[in-house]
Amino acid sequence: MKVTLFSIASGLLLCGAKAQDYLDQSPAFSLELLSDDTDLNGAFLSACHVGAALEQLCILGGDSTSLLDAEVFSFNTSSSDDGQQAENPGLVTFSLPYTGSNGSATVSEPLGIFPNIGDILATVELTPGGIDGSNGGSVLAFDDDELLNVPWSTAATDRPAFLYSWYICNATLTFYPTLYWVVGSGAPNDPTCCPVNVTRVWNN
Ligand SMILES: *[C@@H]1O[C@H](CO)[C@@H](O)[C@H](O)[C@H]1NC(C)=O
Ligand SMILES: *[C@@H]1O[C@H](CO)[C@@H](O)[C@H](O)[C@H]1NC(C)=O
Ligand SMILES: *[C@@H]1O[C@H](CO)[C@@H](O)[C@H](O)[C@H]1NC(C)=O
Ligand SMILES: *[C@@H]1O[C@H](CO)[C@@H](O)[C@H](O)[C@H]1NC(C)=O
Image 1 (cartoon, rainbow, N blue to C red):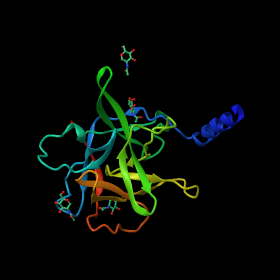
Image 2 (image 1 turned 90 degrees about the vertical axis):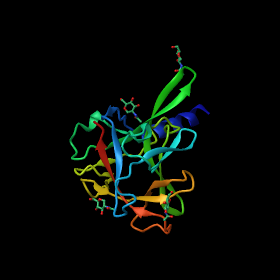
Image 3 (image 1 turned 135 degrees about the horizontal axis):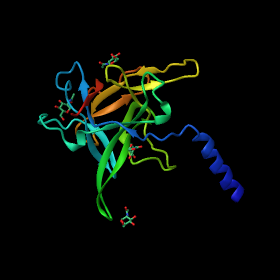
Image 4 (image 1 turned 135 degrees about the vertical axis):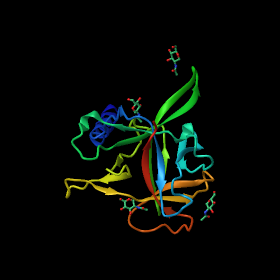
């Protein structure tokens, strides 16, 4: 039994060898949409509750003169990247308030992209972290134009390609227009889906 447990543990270690801490946290910013759709263009993304400590990013709309707490994000990078890459990859993080045994507290949740088998729409969700102690988030980047992307490296390329495949679709879980990632180069069947870009706007 001990041998089995040890094998599992070392397997996890090997597979997790690239696991990294992302603890250099940027100042606060909000995430604004760019779109040909005039209703979506300029809208801000909010963390919208969909389950225990789970939030998707949706458009609450309303008065945009004051930012909600749910519209404030940070970008956590790793000091071991030491700025070598043109685009320092990292985690988009959200500080989720909750009431714990000692009163009010917050937990830092990373944004992750979670594919759904049989669907080209992947769920974009803030989660409290992986069961194996990993952060559960997806490594993302902001390009020179401040556009959020997925830096995609293959062994064949030494520099990552930057993928932009964000869509807003009307979702059933949040009841609001919600951010999704489309896997591959197809377009979603859902007629409520509209392609967008997501840009970082620093909060002063
Ligand atoms: C982001 O960085 C802050 C500051 O180091 C840290 O407290 C937080 O846990 C980090 N969040 C994640 C999801 O790693
Ligand atoms: C609550 O506070 C006590 C005393 O400071 C501390 O020992 C304990 O770890 C805290 N619990 C949590 C869940 O933060
Ligand atoms: C999506 O929902 C919004 C409001 O929640 C509505 O204004 C819009 O018409 C819907 N879009 C489609 C294509 O159904
Ligand atoms: C998002 O930005 C990328 C990079 O500039 C661009 O190639 C893509 O067409 C944009 N997508 C939309 C929906 O505007």
